[in-house]
Image (cartoon, rainbow, N blue to C red; front, side):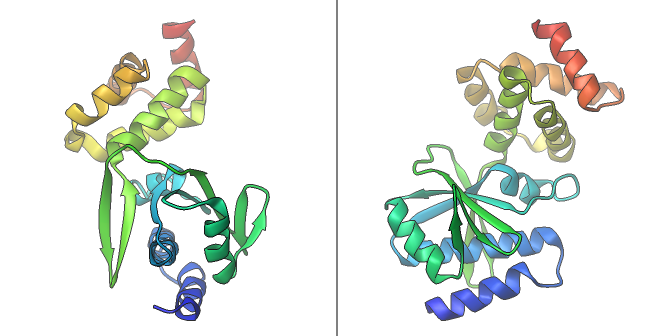
Length: 203
């Protein structure tokens, strides 16, 4: 697709009438396609990845892309050609916010076909692990809620051989077990209960 075609597709995707997660995924795929055609490889991470996996529990207008193989100036040229404007660490277009938090992604990814495009998303286990680590080490209670939502949604499809080594490296495998136990207990779960749980185990 030409730059003009991608720019028009981006406008239609973000401002379309579909479900938010569908618009988010298509928008991210268009951005990735434009970057790929310029010699880069991008992967959706962060909140956008959470929405892909648990759209019923999480919605965001932030699109975080780890972009490999080129410089930030190269990225800026692509995004500017698509009609985005640089504002601090973000590129924006209306209420769309795009951020590039890194240039290297060692974790595994999943790919989704969206028409003629491919959307790369960091694998679900790594997204979940990130939220567990944030709850355990940074006291981000909202991350605990996100982790529990993902645990409920993923059920027994979580690959322990992928997530546990990741958590072990981050010193948070015990927190994963604690959150699983809470999720399975049927007790009310909110930021206050997650804060109390953290202090009960880690103070």
